[in-house]
Image 1 (cartoon, rainbow, N blue to C red):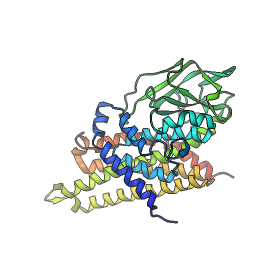
Image 2: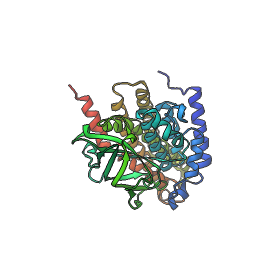
Image 3: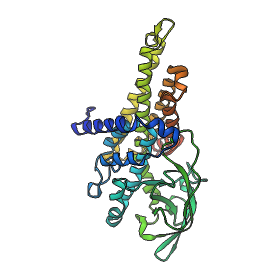
Amino acid sequence: MDFQLSEDQAAFREAARDFAQGEMAPHAARWDHEHVFPAETLRKAAELGFAGIYVGDDVGGSALSRLDAAIIFEELAAACPSTAAYLSIHNMASWMIDAFGSDEQRRRWLPDLTAMRTFASYCLTEPGAGSDAASLKTRAARDGEDYVINGSKAFISGGGTSDVYVVMLRTGGEGPGGISTVVVEKGTPGLSFGKEEEKLGWHSQPTRSVIFEDCRVPVANRLGAEGQGFKIAMKGLDGGRLNIGACSLGGARAAFEAARGHMLVRKQFGQRLADFQALQFKLADMAGKLESSRLMLHRAADSLDRGDPEATMHCAMAKRWATDSCFEVCDEALQLHGGYGYIREYPIERLLRDLRVHRILEGSNEIMRVIVARRLLRE
């Protein structure tokens, strides 16, 4: 057990930090305010290998570990959680193609995805199937060598902007065993998108419904066998949960550092905020939440990298703890700033808005508890 980063991991962290602070942080407030999707900045991130972090290097990926990814996403999110989170989703969708696609499929889609010449979205949630994802209704009917898809997906990050949609849909009967995974490309007849959702946060990435109306897609676009789609989706989410937890950690760390700096200079009642013991205790608790979140995320990432049979539980635990705890850190940081934390001149309110949704997506934190409890109570 070694808590020190390797030389390579320290280099990844430094490269991600330099990129985040140089290319993302100066623009994050404007991206948020003007709802800008920073495609060119994302392509610059891809030049550093951040668009296919754990995708094979034969198709342009970096072939790094889930632990390496957690380190990288923490740094990127310290500058802009919203943009880092989209990059996480792109990585998740790309990995699903890499892990479950044929060699032809990998070579068809991944070189462009890892360079971010094209962008990817993950499509599981539906208007009537959120936490109960296995009840999804979008259906693909076989017609010769094609599937004809009808249905819709909700709250899709990158919807309408992404070029490649990794879609979970029903090819068989009810329940998880009837679900398959199919890649649908933008521009396919019958594929359309809803209006851009007006959200609390995550303003640097568009969110839309994805609509299928007699959308004809080759059977050759299916990843894996029919009926494997739910398992593929859940395996993608194990890593996605770690990444979104790391994005919460990065955003909360930035809020913590801002609060600490504010306490050292802000004076009330004739002394610095840093000199009030009650506020010192608050800061100490915030630091503890950051450290415990990082430890749980890195432990879960190591578990996933090693193929530990408890990896899914570890990822659920870490996601639940990190996203809840790091949102609390952001909230406390805003409180320590007083009224300044509530205005857009300071980054705290943006960080808080961006981190709130992390407790809902990639499986709500209530579902994370269900996953953990089921594993603990198995006989």
